[in-house]
Image (cartoon, rainbow, N blue to C red):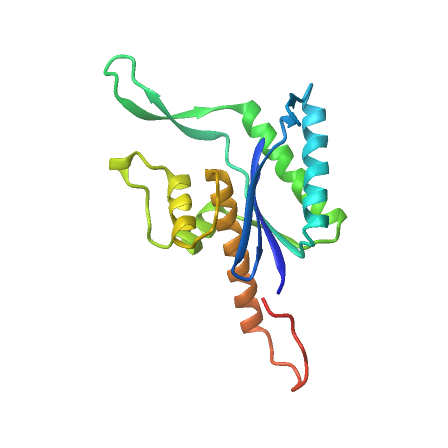
Length: 197
């Protein structure tokens, strides 16, 4: 089996190592070292890089999928001060966008330095593969992360956080892509032993 890793990169990064039907998930907070908050962005970035290097090496990861970083505009649920109703509002947070961009590039650099192949996947692509036709239920005030958590529960993947659930979706997408590539590869000799996914 090939051990692959899915990453939902942010200051709190959801991760998943998948090996066949076995999924191990978690959440890493780059903003903390133990219980202490990092003192600056450089310490956060170094903390993230060291953690990811260790995850890939000790997890014997052979391929990585990284969710493409989000654009600067994000949707946020806020309470309308006039009506008191919860509404979805688009906000721009340049500091968050810069952090996501840096950490995403850092993840690519770590993979590259370890000679581990990686792919960048758009959120729409992995969600279509992992969630199928499921959508957030507005009656339950669900978002896409809630749907990923629900799919993990159906697949018996223990994802304690929504970000870890999304990382499981990213890992699932990579497994699917690798199986498709293998199925479309030219046939080898009778005794060629390929690696099972």
